[in-house]
Image 1 (spheres, one colour):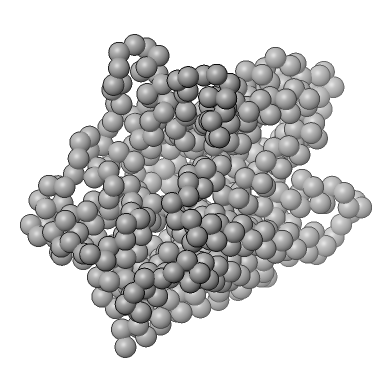
Image 2 (cartoon, rainbow, N blue to C red; image 1 turned 180 degrees about the vertical axis):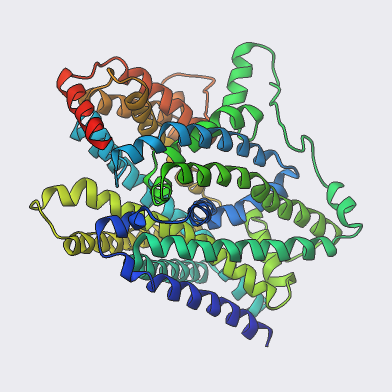
Amino acid sequence: MAIALDVLVVLAYLGLILGIGLAQRGGSSSMEGYALGDRQMAWWAVLASILAAEISAATFLGAPEAGLSRGNWSYAQFAIGTVLARIVVSFLFIPLFYKRGVISLYEYLEERFGPRTRRMASGLFLLTRVLAMGTRLYVSAIILVLALSAWRGGSVDSSEKFALYALAVVVVTGLTAIYTTVGGIRAVIWTDCIQVLVLLAALGFTLPYLLSRIPEGWQGVMAVTNPPLFFDFAPPPQQGWWNGLRHVLSSEYTLWAALIGSTFVTMSTHGIDQDTVQRMLTARNRRQSAVATIVSGLVDLPMVSAFILVGIMLRAFYQAFPDPGLPTETREVFPYFIMHELPAGLRGLVIAAVLATAMGSLSTALNALATSLARDFVLPRLPAGQSDAAQVRVLRRCTLLFALLIMVVGVVTAWFMAHHPKLEILPLVLGILGFTFGSILGVFLVAVLAPRRGSDFGNVLAMSLGIAAVLLLTNPFGLQQNMGIEQPLVLAFPWRITVGTLVTVAVALCFSTPARAQQQDSGNSSLAK
């Protein structure tokens, strides 16, 4: 009976999402309607969609893992940089994109510099998002593995783990692709609203329930925390400016990473990433878009802090009630608690929330990937004058293509993680945005802030060198040691985009914009007005 109630809750959620998504077909009969909802979405719906895009299943389980392993809120420092960056984005990029009337962000780069810059930026986005999204999907399957283990009363071997991971990836991707393909961006945004409500409900019920199970309540929670509770200034273990700088750049959750690294990360994910910016451009005007963007940053801190609190509470709970069956992998502790400790019904709601985070971030990625591929590569090669129906067919086929590609990446990741649970593949692939997005952000900054600098060839070189610099300083496969560097500087993931951006900007500024490109960009700007 308990399992039946959980299954009923999950099925009700899935039925509601599919029903709402499929009902949006009528508003997706044109390119503007399919990709941007005719720019008529309410700001609060855009806000919900941005939140749904940000909170993936990796966040739902990863933030509690950070609280569990660290015993503090140092991870939440990143919210400082996210707010600062959203203010910059709202005044620097959003007005520009509205004025130019772009659908794919990378159209602006062709107007400003030329086709090679546009194609390289869009291509990097497509490759990066497919890999990042595919690897994240497996996280939502962790709870299925633990469910089978709880039901059988024993461990699950690697073959069964892979089968469950692959099944979850295929089902989640397939269901999300159905309503995203049919309903376009309207389906994405309205289903995102439901998914955020499910997420908040699950969090709202889980926190007080978990607190009620901890001896001494809040005092018991605070007793297991570790300093620093929030701000980490990362004091260097050795004296000297170089040791201090290297320590800061190689540390993840510090105040410096929050103020600088997180600002650059969010400027890229919310300023030049088609995935997130496409939702912003569905608002009725740039003012409403800016409101949704900034408010989402203000909501980010309490929401992330609440997820971290779940992890700290789990730390207190399992110290008070040791469990010999507790997973050794910290990322599996919260799903383990869900399956073994939550009551029926609430357990189904939290499982639905895990699915909601996976489907919410996936639907936004599918729509954005399809839009970029269609606008930047496919439609420009078709005969001019394609009808709205023909363009929408292209978008839908692109959506299905990316659903298949993401499914393949997710299944391959599932196989690796099932057979090699200690393999350090996820930190590399989940942080892949850091390898490429800095270069894209750098080109956009040059385009906006230096109207006479940057060229089509120079930008391609600058982006390539930006990626190379990040790869070198991230030091995969011991690159620095192979070059004879005895004490390598290994960048922590918050700093990758910062370095990539600065290198790209420095190189791109060495090239001047040809006079013809300046005149063309000026003419396009005048027409947009």
